[in-house]
Image 1 (tube, rainbow, N blue to C red):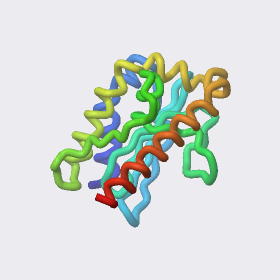
Image 2: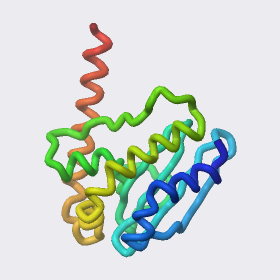
Image 3: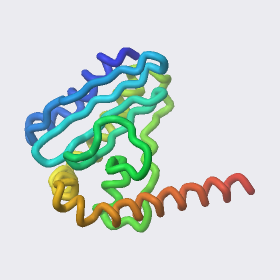
Length: 164
């Protein structure tokens, strides 16, 4: 899949971000070796980073101060499912597996992005408030702890399933 097709799919499925919330594309990057792509959207509220990494579509939310590219150490970027789980009061984040039994091509990515857009849209106002700089500074440690509990839970499940 070409990155231009990925960028078009993001724009199509997340049209509501542009139309209802004033987001704009501020960055696009293609990594040629793996066909990985990154697209950064920004509004007055926060940033959203859409990426395709080794065939999987990913969506993360961060404050305006979040760096647009990779970084080492604690990240101010949080996966969409983690954010939704945090906002809805889940004990630990669940793993958003949106992958259907589709080949690694445009149709799979299109389906994954459609699922993420449907999951995100009802929570936009809450998400944008959470990642507003002032709110984010107050709740970042809590969010990071929540994300860490999710990683621990996933590792425990993987360990338990390996022993079966």
